Amino acid sequence: MANQPATTIRGIRIPDQLWEDSKAIAAAEGFKGASEMVRDCLERRRDAYIEEHGGLPGAGPEPT
Image (cartoon, rainbow, N blue to C red; front, side):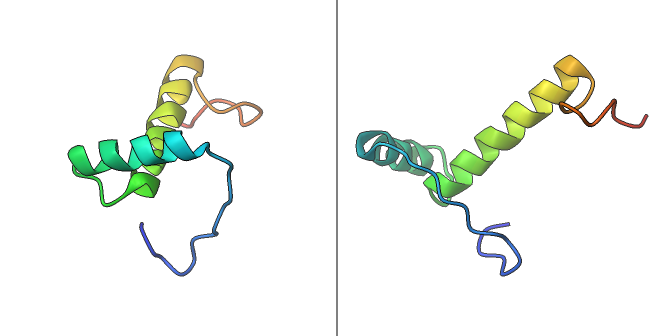
């Protein structure tokens, strides 16, 4: 997924120390960078939400 031309660039504010810590953790865990780790965390959180609630807010249940 990284560096795909069709991927929209998003901007979010992250405190400097949190970003530096995240880069170090990402390197230690084998991610290509903090952005890849953030994507992974967001995907896991989304999947956990769908599992717990049966779908995304306002989207109805996932097809089975």
